[in-house]
Amino acid sequence: MHETLDETLSALDDLIDEIDDWMIEHGYFYFDLDLNDELAARLDDLKDRLVEEGDTVVEPLNGYLHNTETHTYVIAVDTLREIGTPAAILQLVGALESMDSELCGYVSGALKKIGTSAIQPLIEKITYRLDNPAVDENGYAIDVAYTLGTLSAIRDPRSFDFMVGLLDRFADEGRFRDLAYLCSCLYDQHNPEIIPRLRAIVEKCGNKDTSNNVATDANSTIRRLEVDQILESEDWMIYGCCCICKNYDKQGRTCLVSGDYEPRDNFCLRCKPKAEFCCDLCTIAHIIAPTDDSYKGGCSIDDIPPIFADLKYRLDQEEFTREFEIATGYRDKGSIDILNDGMELSLEFHTAGDLNVMKEFFEGAGDYLVGAARFFVDTEEIFDESYPEAVDEAGILIRDDDGCIVAVHKEGRFELELVLDPDNLENLIAIIDTQRFLLLCDTHTYIDEFRERQDELESGLRPVRGRDEPAEEPDDQEETEEPEAPPPPCDHEFELLKTHKKYTVYRCAKCGEIKKEFN
Image (cartoon, rainbow, N blue to C red; front, side):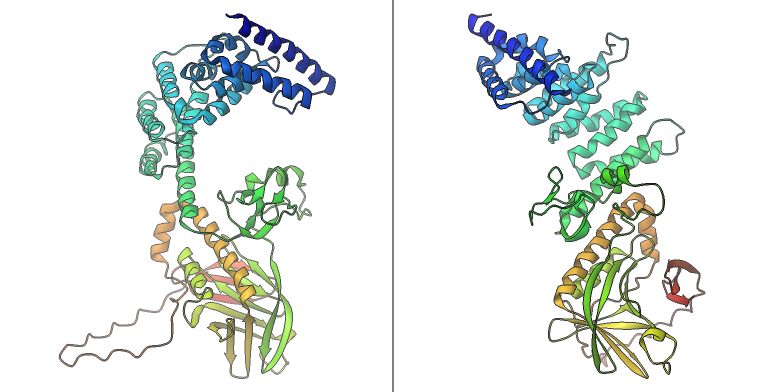
């Protein structure tokens, strides 16, 4: 070893002692911390000098790399990563088999930053260890978990093809724990081509009474990959949780669009998600939330807060403005409700396709939409006693000349119109997209059952229609087809859809018809 390198390593030893003393003095117990300016500057200078040595310093750094009792290993990992030569990469790959999980985690992060240059050494290490099992100094089998997890995080056809090949090997050798982990790791490649293969694994392993999680992890990867396809296929405008928003700084808890502070479990109207909705992501809500039922805070996907808006409505030619809340239903509710104490306009849906039709209409397709809107009116609070106690009638949505959507209800003795202006329509589109996103994410957990149900269930919405066009007259020279006989009436099987403080709503499981019973 030449004199310059000796001097550099000696200076590094002295600096490490100073760093350790500084950490003890300040009560720090972790090595990946921000040093003071003087120590940080000296450390950067020494690392630069080591990097200049290139492969000459790789072997001497091995002793520093495996010293996890001090700040030494952090410096060694960072230096080897910056050198980035094949010899340096091999040194880091070898360290992934260490017994120290903190070292393995730090090394894995360094190799991920190196990227594609680390793929072949990682593949060779995994292959070698599978072909040559060994135990560590404590007698425990050395596994490939960190090495495989690191490879999976480097997206590349070589990584993907190698991991696909491992599926057969792990299955043939009965390595179900490794197979489950591999199924989970395959998500990191973000390649949907693996979905059919994972489905076959689920079918084969799903009914086995084993302690492994092969089917669970394979299903989870399938669902996450399909949700990613949803996210990539749409420009989503989501009314949702800041925790998964692309425009959210989790560390600073600030919105990157407005620059304002936002709690992680807050909801916004312009969230662009980078993951599927999952309340487990909002861990802080679970940590601080008391177990008693009085707690109303935290993030709950089943209880998304309403939006409040002042809406105009016309009743028998008189115009009023009152505050309404726009409340969303999820999972078993299937509705977006615009309501106050006296009336409710319910926009109902059964499938994502229903929501697509509704969104297209609000964005400008067609002049009116029928079948989606239902008015529920409590006449005791709104109307004169001479009117019926309650009215439950389907409404129609009409586009007017001012760009507003007017929900219209006409009954023999009164007319009711609720006006949704362009600003409120933007909010509704965000809410519709949220419900569509949640519905699609949720159904991928049981996608096959959902597809069967979707085929059987007649949509509760009619297509968006423009102005009526005259029907084409049949050609006299052609035979006119006999009209189809009307279908027989449905022998309804009503199931509970949702409850309200004033009524209960039921939906027929066969035809989708809705009925409401007032309490």
